Image (cartoon, rainbow, N blue to C red; front, side):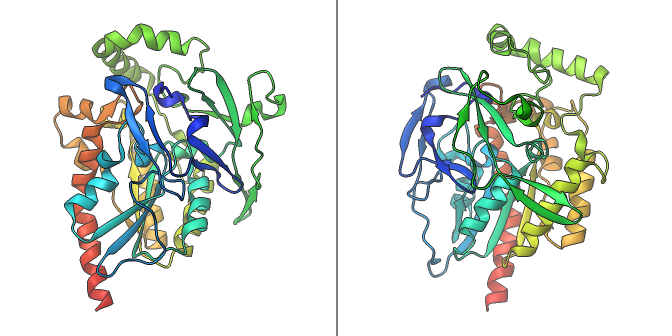
Length: 356
């Protein structure tokens, strides 16, 4: 199976799920071809990326966290052991992180996945929310490319707000996968594509893969061009965070409020930044303000890793992101783990004191 970075949700690596849309193929061991030989994807019987099985009962003396998120947390571009969830386990003895993150999903699907697995004993819920998810929750269909580079469209579950109430739609999720020819025209306004928050490809050019191939050997030039052009155009990949009354934020806020209220364990909300915020090409203050407001409103603990990441030198920050895979790099995952370590350690200590 080949990977062309942010464009691919492999059909061969996923299994239909009527409520969430899909999980990974259970008990799979598949090499994703890519740069430097690609990477190995290993899943457990539950259909999530893990080298171990998820059991309901928590082992004695173990502090268990459940992590939900998208491909930034599931680890596209690297094997399981190099993700921030697994690195936290190594750094903090007694910690177990069950990583339920699913590549290509939105926060609404992640909430539904939580509902499916919340009965598992745990001490902490971690929501690793890649901020770009605010685009995905407002859509009903996801556009991606298969291993051969052909576009396909997959339906997803979605919520709508009815006053203050969330109404779930598209469940059971339709199984049918559409092509560019068979996709109903009425669904076109509801399609989400993974490249739409990328400065170069947000206009959905049909030539984007050709452009990517031309620019690939010129990454330093491309990076400089992005910096110059975005500064003049005021590029904002996630504008729905700019004010507290946008439709996207109102929906995201409602989903997260319901999710946090339903959790019997403490909640740690970790907004993962868009790559343009790492290099100063976009302004993160909108999403930072919204999540601070949400934390104050719900009482959940908020940890924003961006300030810590921005303390790195500019040339180091460029290494936090993989242009090849369109995700946090190995260095980026390690940096997130280093920053999260003391936060999770403090919650572990607090949990132990509470239990005693």
